[in-house]
Image (cartoon, rainbow, N blue to C red; front, side, top):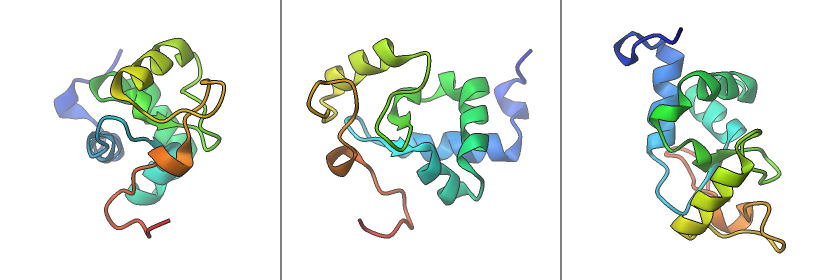
Length: 108
């Protein structure tokens, strides 16, 4: 059973707040969020698995531009609806174009 939103662990709240900063049509990786909040990408993945439905979960993806595992088709539908740049073939996000720098991230 999931904890109510007002009982989220601090890390979960920080991860979800970071994801809320990403605008439509842009994305971040699990590692980007982890670096921003001070944890590893696996911890970000765990938070997203448990509580990610409360935010734009499709905007957090793997470092190779692949959509979240198990949600590929829905994520791709949302990328197209938001105008998120995709790589040739349309199965992955073009990170060079779509990656959003979280506040405090060095420019790439």
